[in-house]
Image 1 (cartoon, rainbow, N blue to C red):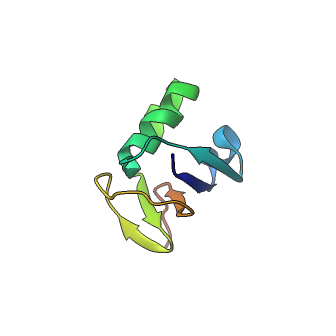
Image 2: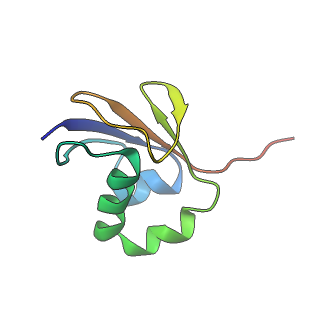
Length: 81
């Protein structure tokens, strides 16, 4: 079971905490991590639109495989001007 570090920002931080470790089954992908988090906080699905993921500092997709010690960041949509 790989253990990954989760880093969340903005409203996602309020729901899931700023930093924490999560154990996932072998072969898990970023999308599996998100599904695990949604089982904990189902109403977080409202934040999925525009949500981006980063694995070890590089943007990635839900199909990206996870490895022991990866740091996964949850990046909500943001705006600026």
